Length: 243
Image 1 (cartoon, rainbow, N blue to C red):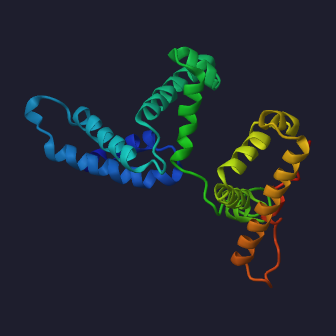
Image 2: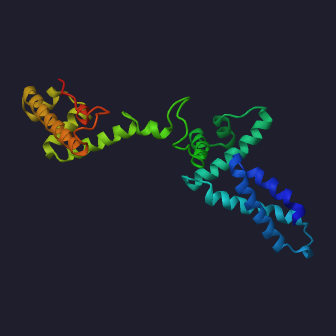
Image 3: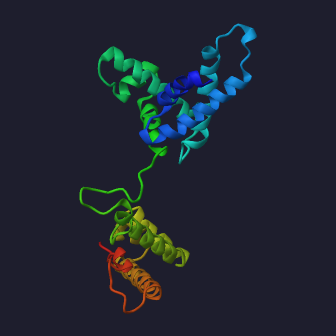
C-alpha cells in the first residue's frame, strides 16, 4: 500500500481547487487507499492501481459532496457546474484559451443563464471572510456592512418603517400604497375617492407626520440620549407628499 501513496496524492491534487484544501483532501485520499487495500482481492486478476483509483476517487467525491459546500446549492446546479467545468477544460485545449460561459453553454446545449449560475455557485464553497479587506487599505467586509449608512442600517430602517405602516388603519395604508407604490398623483386619487386634491394632500401629510413621530419615538427608546448620532434618523425615510 505504501508504494501507492503517490497515486492517492495525485488523485487528491486533481480534485483540490484550493491550496488550503489539499491537506484535507489528501488525508481523505489516503483513507480511500486504505479501504482499497483492505478490500483488494488479487485472485480476481485486477491490478491494484486499477482497483484503487475508483475507490480513492469515490471517497474524495463523497467528502467534497458532504463537506465542501458552506452554502449548498440545489443538486441540479451542482451537477451542471461539474459538467460545465469538465467541458470548459476540454474547450480550453481546443480553443487555446479559456472559453466564455456562453461558449460552454452553447457546447452543452444549455441556457447561458443556467451555466453562469452554476459556475458562480462555486463561490458558495469558500465565501469571503468578513475579515477580508473590502478594498486596498480599507476596512474589512464586516466593517463595511456594519458601518454608518451601510446596508444593515438601511435594512433596519426599512423594517422599522414597515412595522409602523402595519399599525396604520387599512384606509391609510391603501392611500400610502396608491401614492407611493403605484405612484398615482394626488389628483388621480382624489378623483377616485370623490374628494378634493387638497383633502388628499392634507391626509397624506397627517399620515406621514404620524409615522415620523412614531419612528422618532421608537429610535429614542433604542438609543441613549447621550449617544452620538452616527446616521440619518429613520424619519428621513419619509418625504413630504408631492402633487
